[in-house]
Image 1 (cartoon, helix red, strand yellow):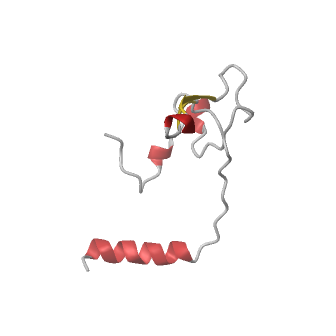
Image 2 (cartoon, rainbow, N blue to C red; image 1 turned 90 degrees about the vertical axis):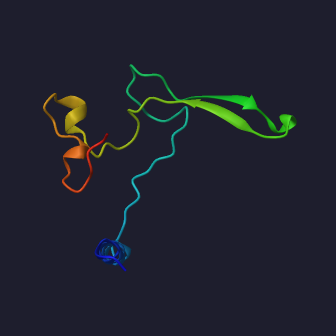
Length: 90
């Protein structure tokens, strides 16, 4: 096992022992959202009558819990990328 794999294994063991709180919320057309933005839209493109079910979803990104609120409301505010252990987006 490489040093990196050992680090991952150690991190995994630590995380397994943690108590987790799920902050996820189901998103649907009735979900609360900023009033100036549209609600989730979903449209059936194919149904089981076609032999399979496919939906098209359209949703804005301002639903639910923000883990990085400063950058959403304040120009020099920090984003989730400011957390040291996350790689920079390419």
